[in-house]
Structures are given as structure tokens and as C-alpha cells.
Length: 65
Image (cartoon, rainbow, N blue to C red; front, top):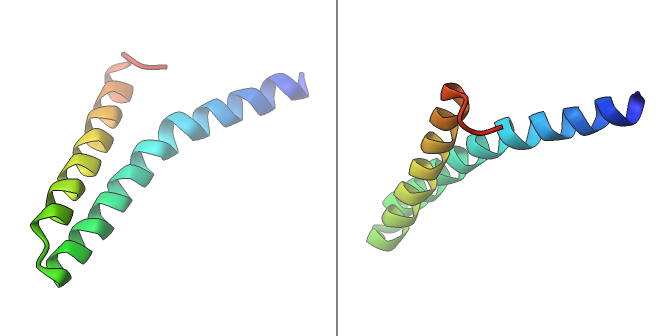
């Protein structure tokens, strides 16, 4: 039972924290791109934020587990 609960906790943490981490990384990279005036970092930031937002949307809609 404890192993099942631990596995469930790890799954929940992965599926919910990973998109939030991606969004946070995207914001940080975007800020750094703004400080350094780097359009490449801006594009990378948009990709990170976009993937995180889509992932959260899929979670919210119940499409992903």
C-alpha cells in the first residue's frame, strides 16, 4: 500500500510540477533574453512557456494522465 501511494505521489508530482517548472524556466529565460537583448533566448522562452501551458491545458481537460 505504501509503495502504491508513493508511486501515485510521484506521478502526480511529475505531471503537475513539470509544466509549472517549464513555465518558470521560460519566464527566467525570457527575462535573461530581455536583459541580454537576445532574440534567440526570447524564442526559447516562448517555446518553454508554450509547452508548459499546453501541458497544463491537456491536464485540465483530462486528456493526459
